[in-house]
Every structure is written in structure tokens, then in C-alpha cells.
Length: 447
Image (tube, rainbow, N blue to C red; front, side, top):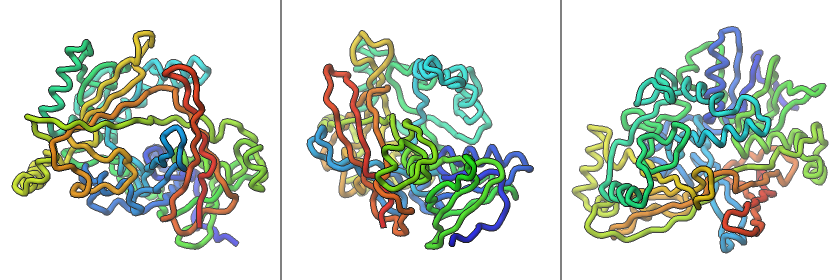
């Protein structure tokens, strides 16, 4: 018998990641709303959640990452890929690349043309502006005073300046901002940082709101399923520190558990494709074929090049003097390599001239990190001693589609350090830009 969480709530927000932090902030701004937010992870009281290069230690670490992995994929020579997801308040915004990127106006407008009202570029741009506190100031494209701090990178590398110059010689334009609706061109990424520290959604939206008496945060909560009564989500059942419990909402339950977690909760609740749920013994409450389909992500490949005559992070790290200076630079000025995102320079271009807009992205860095970001990354173990420069290339747009489903009926396991596995399958198609289908059929909580 699940115990009842004390308290009356108008809204229950499942997940304190980027979306959940913002939703909880907005809902609790009205003092009449009693809001409960549930988070599976813990507090962000670890130094590497705040120093920007902390992603080197957070990604691939069960303390901070759900450690999702794909099963071996034939289309990738049998490799299993990591799928990092943040396990802490702030979610993936506490461990990700910190790159501020909205996408292209034409993509949003295409969604509106397909019938998704309210999602055109002119519809969503005001929302982006309200969220932001942008270093460029108030403009047609950016806002100030919001919780989402965006700043320019706090270091530069001559090798990346040379890449930008070379791209310009090839006919690509240099642009100062990728977030004006047309991101075709080359430039430095803007980052979610504030004065050299990572700026997660927890810092920007959740923590300020927690001062309000009408917002309550519960951590270490693994949500099993929705409580559905008379066709309405009336609450959630969950496990917290080994005990089964439930909470009820007078108003709404809002799923913000991410692209994987939200699907898991819905499927365990009987919401999804009936032909997927029936073999697991789950009674279908609502047959919705789209729940678990059409997940889009950005598969990319990495090449690493040796360089000469220019400085990279490799020799900086392996010099004891320069390593010490690197630490002092960050300690006293909040600048230098400890502030850098995994990729610093971006190139958006068309895969061929027939395309109406940019369909490919190349990302450049002055530090050649491992190709699989899900492996535990450490400076000493992963940086080569020679000067090197990586290039990440991938497609952008609606080319890659995934299907995600659970593989068992049971509730979330209590041992969260076990990975969740996703089976993937690539369907071959004609042409260089044929769709890539990924079927993730084995994601589930494991004891």
C-alpha cells in the first residue's frame, strides 16, 4: 500500500530538468497555486556541476548521468552509443555542452504548417525572449531580465580563428549570433554561463522559486506511473528512498521527465501504442500511436587532426606551469580553458545547394575529447600529448527518427546505477539524405 504524501497540490511537475524548473517557476509565481515538483536526482552540490568543464567528470558518471546506452547498432559497425541524461536538479542543463541554440525559423514554421498551432517562429520567439538574460541586450531576437543567462565564450583559440577564416574563404559567411532565425554560417557559440560558471535551469529558475512557500521540491523520487481516474491524471505513484508513495493534484500533472523519462511514465501508465503495451501486460488507458515515436536527435561523427605551429589544450594541460596558470586564471578571473564548452566554434551549412536551408553542422574545438561522450572523461586519461584539433560533423533537421518503448511492466528499480538500454536499428535508404530510423525497444527500469 503506497503512503500518501502529505499536502494538497494544484499542480504536480514530474522532473526538475530544464522544462520542469521553468514550469515550476512560472506556476508558483501565482501564490494561489500550490506546486509540487518531483526529481529523481539529488542536489547540485558538487563542484563539477558549476565549473564549465565539469561535463568531463559528470557525463558518464552515475552520480550525475542516467547512463543510458544503446544496444549495438549494425549501422554503426556494431557500436553501442551512450545517451547522456542529467540526474540532478537542472537535469541535462547541469551536465550538457552549455551551447545556446534555438534552431532555425523555417523548422518552427514548418511545424505550424503541419498543423501545430502556436509553434511558428513568430509564436515562439517572444517566449525565448522572456526566458533570456542575454549579454547582447534587448533586441528583436533577445531579451534581458529572464532567468536563462547567456554569455559570450570567455576564451579564444587561434586554431579556431584560422578555421573560421578558411571557411569564409570557401564562401561561408561569418555570423555573430546563431539564434536570429537563420543559423547558416560560421561563428562562436554563445553559452549558458554567468561570469564563467555554468548556468543551469536549477540556478536560473528553480532555486529562486524555492523561496516561495507554495513550491515544494522532493528529490530522490522515481515516478512509476500516473494515477488516472475517469480519464484524468489525478496524481502520480512513485518510489522515494525505497518506499512506495503517491501524491494527488487538484489541477494538473505535468510531465517534464525528458525525452526518455516522460515516455517511460506514460507507457507504464497505459498511454501509448496499444500493440506495444499489450505484450507487457499493461492495460491500455489511451491508445496513442505517437507516444514513443519520432524522437529526433543529432548523431555525429568525430575526426581528430594533428596540427603544428599553433597552441591547443593538449600541450597546455601537460605543462605543469601552464596547467597551474590555467587554474589560477579561472580562480581569479573566471576565464581560460576551465570555462570552455565541449565545442566552441560552429559551422552550419547546406549538404548540397538543392537544400533550402542549412542541413549540416560542423563543430570545432581546441581539445580533442573522446568520440563517445558517454564514457567517463578525464583530462589526464583522454588528452593526447600531441597538438590536435577535433571536428564533429552531423546532419540537422528531421532526418533521424527514433522509437522508444519500455521492455517490462514493473515499477522503477531501486538501484538507479544500472543503465537503461535502448535497442537501435538503422533502415537503409536510397540517397545520401535518406531517413535514418532508430527503434529503441528495450528501455526500462532494471532492479
